[in-house]
Image (cartoon, helix red, strand yellow):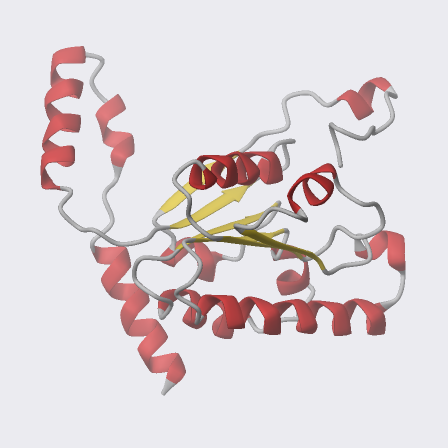
Length: 216
């Protein structure tokens, strides 16, 4: 039943999607403005959005955390679950850990090529997802960040169909941001917004080591 309902919702969302890329087909700014204004005038729905931030470039988690700051400015409640980070204490955790409007959790032990412990990573991923499910069913939170959840999904530590179903059936006013290099197509089909960060150049390629305040 869950799979059938998931497929129906995915098809409905896919059919209703707007291809904004076509505004770039014509370089006439007047046409662009009219098209964009038309889309804005038709945007009457008042519900939360599901955002994916993917790609091999740096800045996916940073972008999500920027949205955290924006949401805090409106005094909304937020939960941040970091599925992979854990081998180092992140700056965002140190900053937000005592904030009254944010619940932030570092649930992982690092990337799989760093831990080399499948049993540990499997248990940590499933524990983190159980926590995420509890947040998805809680209307207390306006924004949820599932940072780097793509890794445990792609490693089959978490069931992608269940993840998609729970996100689709969350409270309709709740916003969810998922980050990760390679986002499964199941999540891309149901996302409202997808942004890709490309790796045009990285300091690591210049043999500059990672540092606190930038990478973590």
